[in-house]
Length: 192
Length: 204
Image 1 (cartoon, rainbow over the protein chains, first blue to last red):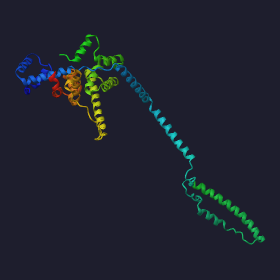
Image 2 (tube, rainbow over the protein chains, first blue to last red; image 1 turned 180 degrees about the vertical axis):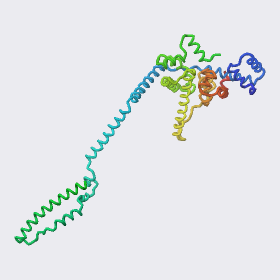
Image 3 (cartoon, rainbow over the protein chains, first blue to last red; image 1 turned 120 degrees about the vertical axis):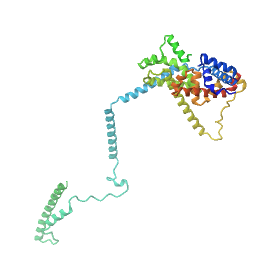
Image 4 (tube, helix red, strand yellow; image 1 turned 90 degrees about the horizontal axis):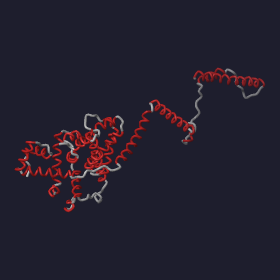
């Protein structure tokens, strides 16, 4: 049989031992005449008694020793972490800088040891590039050449006059070369 | 009527021992002996509580150790506005719930690795022979198994109320739920247990 629904809350309080005095007497009077409520209370009290019979489980004998060991390990770990946290920011920045420089230097050294493609294109199995163009502007050289070309050039026939002319021409040619060099240097300076 | 903890507190005061709150205050000031006194006072009741929660002694001790470790680490978080017992039981309860969730995940993962032809997933029969039920140990084991099989929301309140003998107000503080909810959950949990243990209770 089911308990009386309107009394269910009060029956629970009665089972918990929370009812006192007149309330308790009234419920007990009701229980003596109502089998549904009586069964409900009886079942609850049986259950509570059964739960109380469960033996209490106790911690192991070595519990405190094991806990101390765990705390010691924990303390050591937090000490190491604290030491790391205490290192000032500038020191971290300095160490990071040193690391960056070391990596960069190592990279450069590695590059030096390894032949570059530009220096040795054979590394990739291709032909070398053609020589770089003369930095002196061709127009200016042409102008100087025209300026110097007023002098007669040496001929194939070797008459005494011709030889003399040829000697003069060769000295002129040397002069012209020297002059050309000077102009090249000037042009280089200007370009620079 | 005094509950178990109140009795314990009264006893410790009568015996001249400091209260839990005094001990934690001393520990907060750096007294490690006070911490050890707390451990000695709570290791057994907490192990009992967590054991009924998880149903495994080794796991229970592990969770209780972790609870004390949390108390040690976060001693500064305890404020003397709540009872210390409430605080430590809340930590232990939360850790037990985490352990239960972890177990569930592990179980799901291990089951997903089994095929239909595997025989490993066969569970042992929960039915006991009538002769076995008469035996006291078997009876305790059956009650324990049924408590463990309850849904967590009923299990935690039944353990705290009927095994640890906490007052409804304290359970409400520990679980952070209203007293009305605690009472209704205790009642529903008891009814479920009663139904499951009917055969055993009738015999006794």
